[in-house]
Image (cartoon, rainbow, N blue to C red; front, side, top):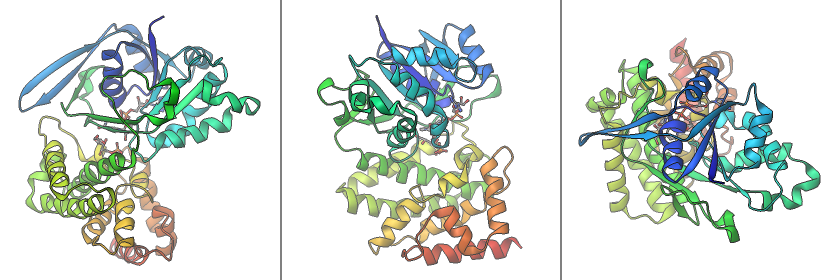
Length: 388
Ligand SMILES: NC(=O)c1ccc[n+]([C@@H]2O[C@H](COP(=O)([O-])OP(=O)(O)OC[C@H]3O[C@@H](n4cnc5c(N)ncnc54)[C@H](O)[C@@H]3O)[C@@H](O)[C@H]2O)c1
Ligand SMILES: O=P(O)(O)OC[C@@H](O)[C@@H](O)[C@H](O)[C@H](O)CO
């Protein structure tokens, strides 16, 4: 039998990145989603195209050898597929992991244990696979937990490729940037060895990679999005063309660079080169990446380990500067009541109805004795008083 991968989430990253590389490595891909329209489109087509766009022009790859199943209407089929798969990946969003866990648990429970399933969550979050594993374990047959390592192995990953919201008439086709990075822990696979997926850079320690990615690409991206949104810009490219926003992004990335250099032993020169590449990437005008996509789900982005509070808290602990990150945070707090974004509506409600202390705790999870707590509390008070 050929190699089979189950991909939860057939959205931008699912189709445009994960499935592309699974396909390239010889896997049949079974997409699992809950949106019937996308299941139908995938089921009724034999191929779709992934087009890389850059200054060097366009280059298109055709993806074939896939099927699609709805976990909403056909859960038993999904369980059967997982029982005989080599790999489970997901790109559904960090808040959705708890919803896909029960069916993955059933699939793992129905495996016998000749070779473990490789589970790799491909989300923008620190240790998303560990989070998914925690939810899966809540649903596993407790009497068989001893044999879990023979039935499944779990590896954290860092995934980087900009896949913007696609034009409405694009169908299944995806336009993306040519750059990509997919880094995954290899130690969890132990004696079995990691799965054979050509795009992946396998490492023993993921933290430097995931923190560098989240606190550079995503901190810079989100800073451009929130400043841009508040200045009436449409895209990230347009935002970065504004010299004040460009400076705000660089200032924030100078601060996160200080953390990355101090914590992970990456040289200043290497980090500077990385930052320059990232700013060039997020400025890519071919991508038409709208500020609402990049700023989406502000409650997740404001949380304790995420792209602003995560690095700012660590900088504060080290006695290093974090003022520019506070500037980004202020703009993020103003991303309120954005059409189609439930979290932005909830953010507005929290800031309106809660005291500054309650809102600070709920939004950021910062401990009241943390060095970052008071500066953030003051910022929350300022945003609240200016909104009145
Ligand atoms: N787009 C990017 O540039 C990019 C890059 C790197 C990482 N990521 C990360 O990848 C993840 C997905 O992002 P995206 O941009 O592809 O989002 P997306 O909204 O395009 O895709 C998410 C998909 O998950 C599906 N889904 C939702 N609930 C589900 C469920 N219960 N079961 C199965 N499928 C479900 C949705 O229907 C949708 O098709 C996020 O964690 C994001 O941070 C995105
Ligand atoms: O996906 P989010 O909501 O965590 O962040 C939005 C963008 O910054 C993100 O999708 C980037 O495009 C991506 O992380 C690039 O690798």
